[in-house]
Amino acid sequence: NAGVTQTPKFQVLKTGQSMTLQCAQDMNHEYMSWYRQDPGMGLRLIHYSVGAGITDQGEVPNGYNVSRSTTEDFPLRLLSAAPSQTSVYFCASSYFADQPQNFGDGNRLSIL
Amino acid sequence: KNQVEQSPQSLIILEGKNCTLQCNYTVSPFSNLRWYKQDTGRGPVSLTIMTFSENTKSNGRYTATLDADTKQSSLHITASQLSDSASYICVVSDSGGGADGLTFGKGTHLIIQP
Image (cartoon, rainbow over all chains, first blue to last red; front, top):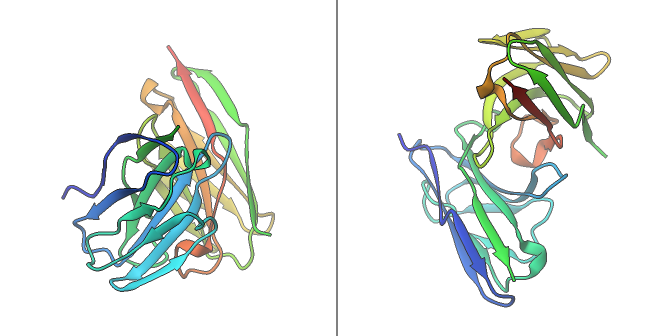
């Protein structure tokens, strides 16, 4: 099992550009989430999904879109990148709702 | 508002020594408490998960304790190794229902010196 795979690992964008961060898991997990991690702050939930075709907003959803067309994939889209979106983004998954999550190794995004 | 406070923010100890990290929470209702280890440049990895009825849980040299009455947890690391250098994150689940019920602490950054 590869676990949770995130691509690309690093990306630099210009303000206003759009971008899709990819997340894939091969563990047949129903629950998937996107977080951002900023210095001095805990992980903050952006969007999450409880199964294919179902998504919901987390704590900081503005400026981001998600879709869940398959169980395996949960891409995160930045619609019009802003410097405030410079962060490290983590995707996580779990089989049951209240089970420790498996995290990917992150996407490091810089917006200039 | 649910909160998770971790202390200390950072800690430096010598290899071979023991250390204890603290986590205080104000999360209600309580479902479970988790400790994660996050190596630099990597995603968090689960160490333990404890429910209301569990006081202690071990994972190798890591031992977590939970006092649900005082809403405190600790993570004790025994005979530290260089590979223990990482951030340790405390996470509390309030609903048992998923990601939107999780509250993350800011983490304790642990450095093990040879």
